[in-house]
Length: 182
Image (cartoon, rainbow, N blue to C red; front, side):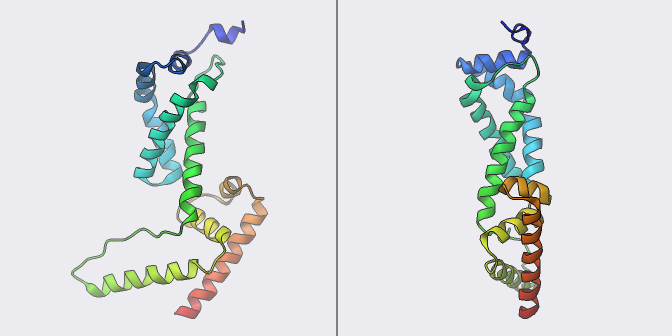
């Protein structure tokens, strides 16, 4: 038997118990690591509700994948955060496929402000639809989600130079389209 196998960390022991259907071990893992998982998901998604969803999905995935965990005598938090990262990236990819602009709350006492806000959203939606799907993804991932170009390249499995070129071309198109609508 490997020496690392004889010196399991408490969390590794819990994961082995989870693999055998121990719900108490899952509950303990949840209570100990929900903060780290939520914080990491929030840092990627920038949205509290979506981060909470990913946190819950992470622990469901832990329950379903515990049998595939290979103990190494180290804390398995990085393995758990790897699950979180994959789920968050999947969420970002899915969410970025649809162009959605969050609704803003305007002061109903000033109908002109409300009208201008709605008009601006309509213009933005109209010009974004003029971009290719990849350009929309790249612009929204960068501008709305705050991802760096390198992260977008990794997420979309594209070379960094391609992402940078598509982003630059998309911005040029947007400038031209917005210039025409003003």
